[in-house]
Length: 114
Length: 111
Image (cartoon, rainbow over all chains, first blue to last red; front, side, top):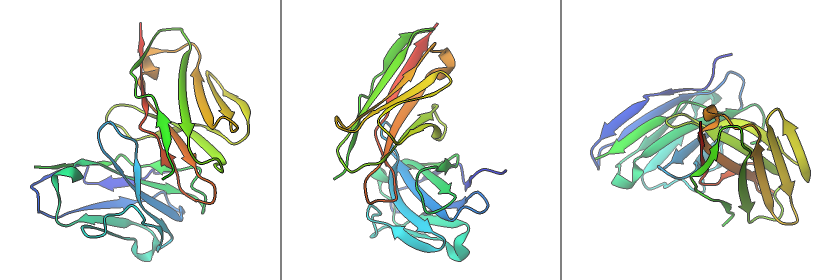
């Protein structure tokens, strides 16, 4: 069974530029999560999708971050414009049903904002 | 604000010893508790889940839960250098379908 796929693996941009990350969850997984993990901290949930609907986006900085999950499969997370404090690893995870209990993480995208 | 607290470490133990990792959480209604292992530069992987008070054993790993004290721990017996990683505690707060992660404890097992 293929795992969660993410791209790109690394991205370096300058502040005020825009960037987009892509995630393809495990086949059949209805729930998809985007996390931000800053160095030395635990993952922080940015947004959670159930199929193609948003379940929780309470910690998503909506003035600069957006995400979509068209057709309920893969998803993109965008930052526009980026700030220095957005430097982090962006992790995508998926789970089978509407339970957050068993999540499988992708390899992450390491973003550096200069 | 629902919180999960962990000592950042590093926790240094000799090979073969027992490593004890601890976590406290603020939401008394939490029902599900998890331990993830994260190697440097890698993504988290689930190693243990626990839902009831008491101990749950899986190989060299034992998770312990005390809901009255809002405390969950992970014991690693016969620690190996390959266990060196950051261990993340995660909690699903009551009434929520999401996980709150602690900042993690870095474990170093030296030969």
